[in-house]
Length: 498
Ligand code: CO6
Image: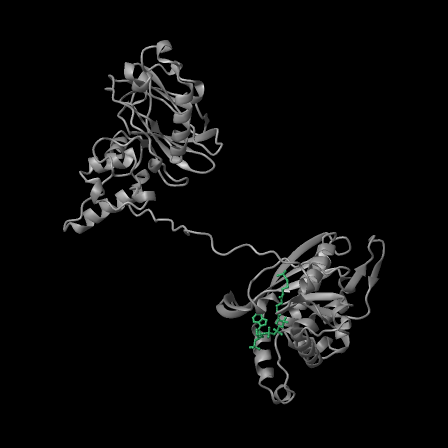
């Protein structure tokens, strides 16, 4: 039986572990010698063992069904992505046959026989089942027999390493760990494997190592050579069954993998502001949200804010004038025209209450977490009043000393996430409110002016969410248009101020 197993070839990178398994199975199920037929008959090996061994009939010079080996990881089928051969083509061992793709990897299947391709069993894009023939090969001549070499644990390839085929080490260079494909590349390019720096497990020479070595040899010579495509690839190119672009690039980047996990998992109870957020956001889930976005040209508003910030009136009162007071006041003015957006609905969604007060909430990022205090009765406040109230709420919020009054009774909310970053968002409505807006970062971007000229503009995006049970898209769009108009032409706010 041993003579039938001289050569063990796998086509996939992760198969070495299956070697070990298959050998155990092989030894466990092999028939006693007196029952054995002449060496080389697969039928004498238990079916489990044949999953991993494709050795026998090759030695009789007959038509051999070249089967797709077990890939491991529970993969039972792969897609044939490309054939590098056609019926009637001559192939030699290690010539690329085809490219197959599983959900985890793309792999080149190489021939393990010298011979003639007599049949392709699948068309491109067809699913090939593990254990079924990929091609039939009429093998030319027999292969001399040699004793089975013991498979050592050190030969195993770690899962995930890029290998295309695997074979027991040959007598020469047997102490150098690598794959047959790499050995072939070494012999094609007359390279001593011992000169190549292996970066795989236990110093195994990977294909990338070989390609890097070849590249360093060619770049160290004064006259640069044309690319040294491995011979079996070159043959396929000659036959026109593989294009030049498919040749492996010697500049394939190396993936850096962290060697060990960093830190340990930590579990802690959800409490404080986070607990409140969990509760209110869970309550929001029952609201059918829709989204609406637009962009606002903040160029005039930015200039106005800049000049007002420097004005003695603002400086003397010690007020920090950010964009927020304008956003909040403009929202209140627009809500005046679209009161449905300042409403609330009862739990069963049977009644809607139009709120008299514009208690505009604003999301605030604090060291303790997200909170949403609200500025009460914005409809009666000036921009300056709003700025003063914002400053008070921010100060208390940052100290964690906001009272229930400041945190409840909101009727509409704005979230200026743009003060941190971002462009678009998908804000979540604070039940029982019916709308919320998330404001993106003001950015200087090129835009066209009314004359069609490209100008610098301060652009900001707004993303609204509304309760689709009581708000329709048209109302949201009209409200947004008015809010946008106030901000884009701040002087128009004066017209509507009460
Ligand atoms: N773009 C560019 N620059 C901005 C913006 C935007 N949108 N907003 C503020 N700023 C500027 C602001 O004008 C200040 O500039 P200077 O006056 O020149 O110094 C500066 O950024 C700092 O502003 P600051 O944050 O101090 O004050 P502001 O009144 O604008 O904002 C705040 C107060 C409480 C809203 C803010 O500090 C904050 O906490 N923002 C984060 C809110 C948040 O966490 N929202 C996420 C909630 S979850 O909505 C959510 C859908 C998801 C994403």
